[in-house]
Length: 220
Image 1 (cartoon, one colour):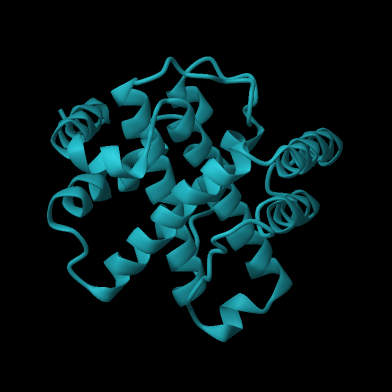
Image 2 (image 1 turned 90 degrees about the vertical axis):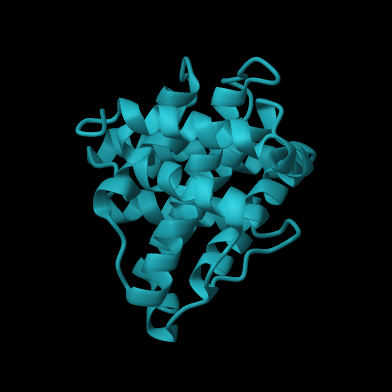
């Protein structure tokens, strides 16, 4: 997750995809926390992305372009007009926190080591259980997030219904999605992503997101 995949610096397409990956995580966390829903397919993609330590490019590291559609669609409106309603502001808050935490993680060797060990354990669990979404795999990834990322600042405060934030199963899903967002944030940082420069290149990022959306089935 940390050092196996290092995109070339200043690669705008990599930054675009990684931003979409963070937005995907933020959108799914919001769904899970506020409505008790999360797309099992997108959760599966998040786990695949977390475990893809030998990915050859950004698309592979984020588990495919198709699963980034929601993030790519959300990218341009947020960059150009900002959040238009409270739920969009929440998505932006989650995404900014993921971006900041990714930088903190890269600067903290102990936290990076904890995350790496957690990913290695998850890979062994997947081999043992034969399921990416096995409860033990999700619980392990949730612990990895809590112990490796949850100790860093700024902590992500997830808003939602208490009944969806207190059950162990729901908590594991939300933390796994957040860890997937950190995976995307690390890729964004490694590709030269910085919060202040994102605003400066928002026009290029917006066009990049449109280019990727046109590559999706039915979008030509």
